[in-house]
Length: 622
Image (tube, rainbow, N blue to C red; front, side):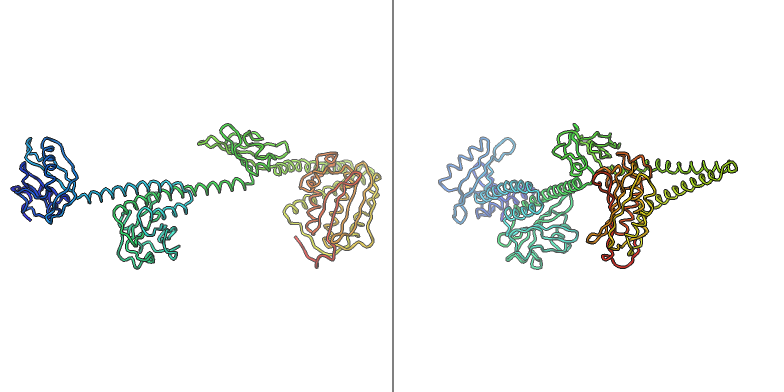
C-alpha cells in the first residue's frame, strides 16, 4: 500500500483516515486523487499508490454528468448525499451512498471529499435499527403486561416467556437466588427434566456473573457440564441479573441452540432483567400487603374483643363479629352511623352499661395519618357482677358476724356483771343464747371455709356406696317440730336403689336445701321431700311454697356471693355461699343440683346422684 496522504506528515490525520470504516477519497479541483484511504482500497480494489495523483476510474460514463453536477453544487456551498453506482477494479458495479463536501483550506475551495458507504451496509444498519426499535417497543408492552400481574408466580412465568420472544432464544427461565442455592422457578420451552432444578451459586454462571460485578454476560464455553446442556444443540447462554431492593434476587437465562445472540439481544436481556427485578419487587410488596391484610382481617374477625373502626366523622366503617355479639347490633345496623355507646378520649378507658344490661370496657386510639379511630371493647359484666358481689359479700359477712358477736358480747357482759343478781333460769337463758349464737358463728365459718375450698377446687370427697334413703330420713328427722307454720312431707319408695357418692357431702347438701326451704318460705306451708330412681340416677327433690326464684336467676343462685335481688329473698341474710357449696359438693361426687319452679308457686331443688350399679369401687376424688 502506497502513501495515503501525499506530501503530508500529519500522523493524526493519517491514523483517522486509516481507521475509518468508510471509503474516503479526496480530490483536487481537477478531480485528481489526493487521498485514498484503506477502506477505499478494500471497497474499489485499487491501492492508494495506484490512485493518488490520477483520476479514479470508478464513475460509470452515464453518471459522469451527475458526478460533475454534485461537485459543482458542493463547490458553491453545502453537502450532497446521493445513492448511486460505482465501478470496482474487477468490473463489477456496486451500489453506494456518497456523501460529498468541499475541501477547504482557509476560505478557498481546493477540492472535494467523497465518503462512500455500501448501500447494503446502510440497509443492514437500518434493519438492525428498525428491529431494535420494534423490540424496544415490544419490550415496553411486555413490561406493561408484567407490571399488571400481581401474583409473583405469574410475573415470573411472564418474564420467562417474554425472554424467548424478545431475544429469539430457544428457551428461557428464571432462577431464584436462595442464600447459597439457585432454584429454577419458572421456565419456557425448556426440557421438562429441568423443572425444579437447583444448583450451588458459587459454581454456577450466576456466581460467575456476580463476581464480575456486571449485570449481563454471554457464555459459550464449558456448557456441557451445566444442567442447561439438556437442551439439544445448546451453544450459548445469555444471562441477566435481576435485583430487588438493590440486592440480587434472581437471574434470567436465555438459552440459544440455533441462532447466535448479539449486542441487541444482550441489551434487551439487560433491560428485561432490570424490569423483572422491579416487577418481582412490586409483586412481593403486593403479596406482603395482601398477607398483612389477611392477617389483620383474621385477627379482626377472630378477636374476642369487639373492634370498630370509625372514620374522621365518627361513623362506623368496620364492625367485627365480636362487636355484633357483645352489643346485639349487627354490622348492617351500625355501619355508616355512630357506635351504640359513648367513646372515651384516646388513652382513657370508659366503662359503660348497654341497655341489655351488659357492661363494656371501651378504649380507643386515633390513626393520625387517616383521621380514623379504632375502638376496642370487651365484656366485663362478669367481673363487674363479681366486684359488686364481693362488695355485698363483705358488707353481708360483716353484718352476719357482727350480730351474733354483739349478742354474745352483750349476754356475756351481763353474766359477768350481774351473775349474783340473776336467777338460775335467767342465767340458763343467757348461756343458751350465747351457745346458739356461737353455733351460728361456727356454721358461718364452716360455710366460708367450704366456699374457699370449692373456689380453689380443693373439695375432697370419698366415693362409696351408701343408702340415700337413710340420709334423707336422717336429714328430715325432727323437722316438723322446728316450725309451727310449716309441715314436712317425705315420700321415699321402699326399694330406692343405693347410690355412689360421699355420704357426708350429701348430708351437707340435704341440710342446706332443707334450711333454704324453711328460710325462703317465711309464711309457712308444705316442705315436700321426694325421691325416685331413674335409669342411671337417683333423684331427690325438695319443694317449698315460698317466694320462689325468678327464671333468669335460677343458675346465678349457684354462683359465689350471689343472692337474688328480686322479691323478698334479700331480706333473709346470709353470705351467698350456701348453694355454691351445694353444687360444688354435688359435682365433686359426680352428681348435679339445679333449681326449678314448683307448680303452684315456690321452688323445687333437684339433686341427682349416680346409681351404685353404674360406678366402680370406692375411690377418693378431688
